Image (cartoon, rainbow, N blue to C red):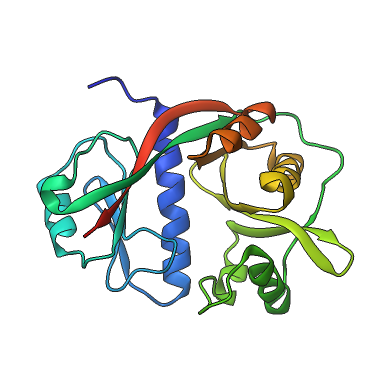
Length: 226
């Protein structure tokens, strides 16, 4: 097996911490176990039931995978597993992207959402038209930041940042025109004094990150249980 970049392991844990925060804010049970994080019970839309934290599969992980219901998804953070024997189909591959910390920007683009009403507007702009995925409880989490690029009274673009281990900040849920380019620029301007990490599967999106100073790390894969 090829050597794993330590930054990929940091990115995987940061992403698992994001998933844990979102699930926990909904009052759902979740755990960190031997080499993986998993959510217990019914999973949230757009969020995996398992995020691996090791490139190898353990007996405990196999048990957790076998217990998942049909429709549950798994994030293989290192792109090293073959989960077909556990009843999973690979949906797509993606790549982790990392931007080293730089000197703090003197100007910040956009704003951080502070109120439940603002979060509701952010969720609608992101595209959450169904049951709420992001509980207002997340606004009390000092490591979670819902950020927006306003356009008058509306939101033009946005993203989430969660601070993980060390000085790492994870970017997720990027949206807006031109693939979320304004949102990525805002994320770098506000949080670029930390190491930034995200992941993308689309080639154009990856190029957008690279043009913003990110570098590619290892691959990951998303699986669906059939």
